[in-house]
Length: 151
Length: 151
Image 1 (cartoon, each protein chain N blue to C red):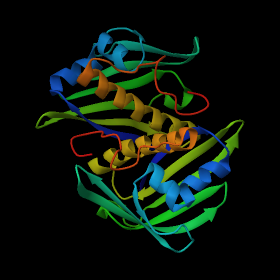
Image 2 (spheres, rainbow over the protein chains, first blue to last red):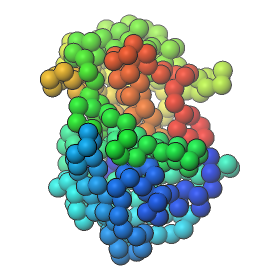
Image 3 (cartoon, rainbow over the protein chains, first blue to last red):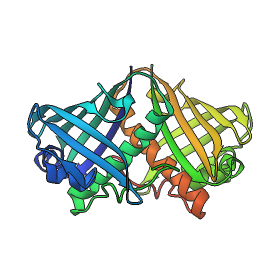
Image 4 (cartoon, rainbow over the protein chains, first blue to last red):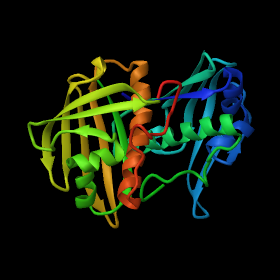
């Protein structure tokens, strides 16, 4: 079992950052504009990604935990085969003026090439989250920064 | 043992990308302007990082392997305690117009918070490498993109 780990520091309160990952509007502002579903424990949020006008992927996340200002955790119940059953956690803590986000995409079976892609792409999306909260503007799909010949 | 993994695709040949990680000038163009030493197997390259005019870190890399157009591998022999003994590999392959870089920072003892930071920061530097090769301009330290309240 291998994990993708990231950290960003966002000049904001943990409550502000929490909203960006616990509400549909927040998620649509940094991950993908095509986000459907509510952020309630037990519910499923549907994310769809596109590039050049065509859908290139999707993910369905079952919300496992919503701890305001502290943590959001999802289980992947739909999407890429390698993602099914993995968990995604966002841990929040305040350090002075900054909200520190520790991101974990846990439980990959093998360190396949797609995992390398997703690791870099998650970093890009964490910077999109930082930008959304600090400036009001993120870079969600389909206007996300491309990292390779696919996406 | 846990690893940091990343992937970028760079619109260039593997030879062009190889130069950016096998020469002092290349490394200074995307990782840190303060790079000293030659890229020869067995030699040590010295990297120093700064922010706001002060040095904030360094790394000494022993070159283990230089396979033109294919792979560069280093062993960390100086720098942050968590890095000592870890290995950094850049694997290259051509896919059409793109050189695919698979990056691995292998052999961390524990998934400490600093590892989360380094994972995100490596993604930022891989994008700096991509920019250097594609546009002639990277974003090496001290002009690297800051990700948190430290660097």
